[in-house]
Image 1 (tube, rainbow, N blue to C red):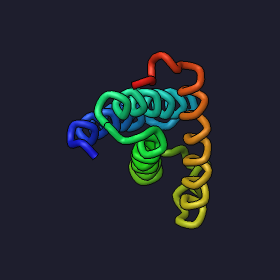
Image 2 (image 1 turned 30 degrees about the horizontal axis):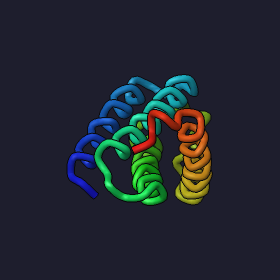
Image 3 (image 1 turned 135 degrees about the horizontal axis):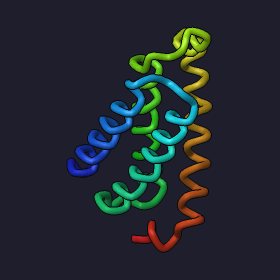
Length: 117
């Protein structure tokens, strides 16, 4: 991967982290999650020379980092304590990555002109 992609994604992750540090709400999470995925897709298009499936895999790798941050660092409401349990967190991470893969495909399909190289 190109370093500038990593730099951009690190910056996007930091932005998402700043939003989510203020406290967990589903609205904030959804906005940060969708914004992160969309921005990561644009960064992949601009910075990576790899074919589409490899760009998608690179974005999904960063989505995993996004989720790991949410579980580890975001102050979740007490009733969501179970999300921090290791076996639950691992299962939810898998679900989040599956949802993200579908979102990537949907965003790509709906915005072909924006994502074509």
